[in-house]
Image (cartoon, rainbow, N blue to C red; front, side):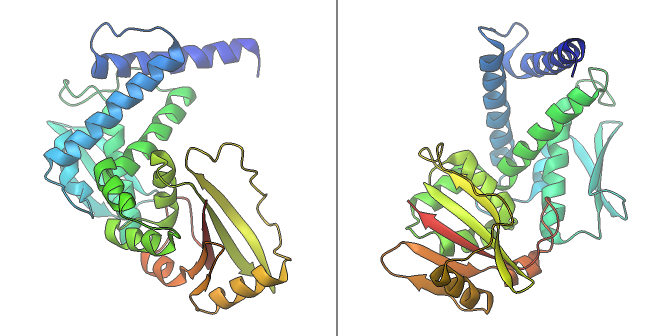
Length: 293
């Protein structure tokens, strides 16, 4: 990327952050450093998100994002056939939201929460709401990233998550599965939200089985002590015979727990099948192993 392109991208991103900062921090926000300013804006944004969830009367999981949407002037939600997950459209007096009715329930919930996030990037003092800046690739990716984070906080507010996690005991596989069911979210979305909060020092190792082999699918880190943990690449084969045996038994539907090493392996295929695809894409059958450190 040329220096000119980098400079243009920086200016475009700064334009978005400055506008968002004025909405959340006031007309003359203090800027001591751009990265610190962005952190302040995000904190104010996420505080407002959690505020509207509470204002909508959502006190216990699962949060109903369609009720929360009303707090952001979403006046109509329609389920239709779409080529995408969802759309948010400005209209007289607010927004219309369209959800892809072919999606599984959990993915519809995420799509709804994600589209609520997009309302923060409109000037809702205008009627109908308007985008306050010109569209660009840089604006798009900043907005999309924040909308993913907003959606996680709508569906899993910090207060609800912390109450649950403070009462959990390692190993956490049982709580993880129960939280998926209680919050009505995918395992992947829950994993990222646990990372947001960082209350558990854990490694979440997700494996997949195929072609007679068991392979590592993903490693998700959580907690303040995880910064220096080496993350193995996807597709790494499990060759250790003891671990291979444990995982093989788990893939057959057994609940396997090894005493003394704080490791539990559970089969999530049933939950995944009932929830359908997550926002990251379709899940093949996998086993998740959670190590509490």
